[in-house]
Image (cartoon, rainbow, N blue to C red):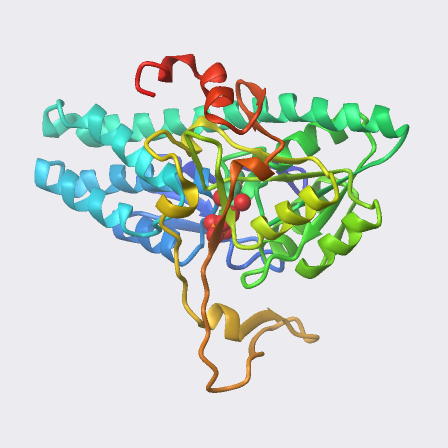
Length: 365
Ligand code: MRU
């Protein structure tokens, strides 16, 4: 995607190959800054503090992080140590483990002296695949938006939650990819952007992306979606996924489930857009089995934003002394999901639907 006319990806190797560069998402939308990650520990810290975030992007960052670590210690012990450190950064998005497992399987049989170079190459392949998958998700999903526009005879309004755009992936995004593809093809699409408390990924990141690309949108308070659905102002919901079970349960940013409930009650189609790296084929019951990240209470008690003089300030918004809970994700059961949009096409959120798109998994099912 382009920022001020210049094409960017969210992560890219530094020319010369000594480090990887990422966009610092904790500074957006008010400052566009590139951060340099030169060691595995720095990559882990960037994931933990959400300098980079979004399921596909943290998978790619972990892969590059492992490559950076192996430059210091390419032994079996180093592989295990850096892998464990990176895997422990965030528990919910399965892409992280998926990327590290993939690198581990590629690297373990190799002699240590070539592991770092091979790890960089494999991380680059994962990044390229993510771009291709997200582009394909965009093509498949844009047909749903175009159909809705035809049925409506005009503008389609899509509600999305959190940020599942190019900032959450390497490029294009998952939930936003169909929107970009439809918009670029001339389909009149308008996006309702949930602000997504507590970290405001919708208000800060999704709004930033859509504005930069010229996609018409409106930011709404998280609690507004149900009301707008009741009043016929939402045609379609499209969200991302951090982990999808083999049965089609979708785990995504906290608050997604409430939107799915409201969509179900109002017969608004509810889609999750996700690349294969997000599917956890080992799980069948998302509510019972997916580990939900519990984040720092300070994300709920405090808000950071820009002040009138252009500086940044953090203010407390919760009554001092009250206990706070901060679960970062929730699970939307498959029965509330109209369909999933993957790089292979659109299918129903069910074991059978997923196996139709990924028949190679039938043997293991
Ligand atoms: O906590 P975050 O910002 O990493 O959560 C991101 C989301 O929940 C996204 O919707 C999800 O990763 C899908 S991104 C393509």
